[in-house]
Image (cartoon, each protein chain N blue to C red):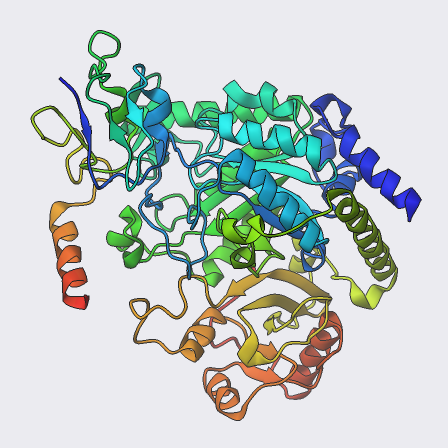
Amino acid sequence: MALQIVAACVNCFACVEVCPSGAIVEAKPHFLINAKQCTECDGEYADPQCASICPIEAAILDASGVPLNPIGSLTGIPLALLAAREEVHHARS
Amino acid sequence: MDLKLDEATQQGTAQKGCAASGCGSNDQQLSHLPEAIREKVFNHPCYSEQAHHYFARMHVAVAPACNIQCNYCNRKYDCANESRPGVVSELLTPQQAVKKTLAVAANIPQMSVLGIAGPGDPLAQPQRTLETFRMLSEQAPDIKLCVSTNGLNLPNVVDELCEHNIDHVTITINCVDPVVGEKIYPWIFWNNRRIRGRKAAEILIAQQQKGLEMLVERGVLVKVNSVMIPGVNDEHLQEVSRLVKAKGAFLHNVMPLIAEEEHGTYYGIMKQRGPTAKELQALQDSCAGDMNMMRHCRQCRADAVGLLGEDRGAEFTLDKIETMEIDYAAAMEKRAQVHAAIEQELKAKQEKPAASVVNIPLSTLKKAPAKRPVLMAVATKGGGVINQHFGHANEFLIFEASGIGVRFIGTRRVDQYCVGQDSCNEDETTLDRVIKALDGCEVMLSARIGLPPYEALEAAGILPISDYAMEYIEDGVLGAYRQLEEMGRLAEQLHTGFSVA
């Protein structure tokens, strides 16, 4: 039972200090969660602390690989607008 | 010079701890800045229009974590060509930040201020910020330290902040009403939970106000920054201004929202527009009252280095400062000498009326004779002189000339959003952007200007004048105003519909 940080992470350190288990590793290119230490904050807090402060959508996944903060959930930007933006980026590059 | 050095050192030591400062009384902070505050801010480039041409500042990016989300911020963004808050290229450890500060202060002896402004919230997880301050107040006691914050964690950190050499704190307060706040802040992290909506705004506002009160009680100077978001908090900011002024903030700085789609922020993508220069000025005027407004704010990056309006950060990257050899004691002595010389120059200028900006209170302006006021843009490299070629200007100082004198209105930047990036504003030429930035101005004063831009400005209703090259700005602005009068243009009704109410 452990959470996972994936490539969307911007290494902002916010999760490092709020993790009660010291499970966040300052790795490059992005931070990682030491699965052996992570408790998902079970028994300590109502919500996993890293995912409660993380500002980046879809950067932290639960044990089954589902984002704890899905796309659009933190910024409130409508998904259709985000998708349109992605297309423009692809067209440009 | 020895005497000046002692003074500088003493000043640095005396300001350690909040109790040493003589300010804190509310009524003193109204009207004009009291002597104690003026003494503190005279060499702070961010607080004094005059000082910012002479003294330099730097930000060190040691604070990456944030505890709230603002709709104008995107934590993923880093573009070296871009200048706006929250954007940095290189995150520093406190040790690296101290090294960088000492290196910059040795190479740019005009440096007087070190600020921590992000790229996250410097007080959200304050250890890195406080450690940097602790080391700097020991190793560079002549450098003033300041910090900016969203205020959420400020009340918890006030006493620790006061242990260091901090004499200025900036709180970004965009609202005092949670109904407005929930349109600006989608969430905060508070008591181990992510809190959203109106409740989040309520908590944030309460913490900001509490933090402001605690700092004022302890005699720390507090500046309040507000981001003007048209249709969201623009009208509300007058109330914010009244409240923070009543609580003892010594400056209120209303800044325009920067929101472009390519920044990927909520406001950028939702096409929330920023204010026009006219709207910003009108709000700054109506908030001003008897309180000082900061009209020369450049909305710097969280890792900016140098004089305001320039960024020498690239000269002081980590690998470059590694190779620098610095004699810290000698550097501090040199700074004291340079600062003393600048101080002398500033004092001399104050005694020479032509060289100082006449600040006329708005109440007087309203009763002014019927000759209408005119906005003029000035290209200057500093020193209070019209000394820059139009084509080299990245920003313009805006002055208002009227029947009763000249007053400084603010700055307009041309490179505000991005320069040299293919993806940014690709349909606009630089000249288009300059003309847009000068909207509302009827005159542009520069040392020189080429013929094609001359014609383009003229066609846009902005009269370029180079007759006052190398003259003092105020003399040039008044001279140009007289020229307009002789041309019969002051009697005309304003075609732009612009007025200073």
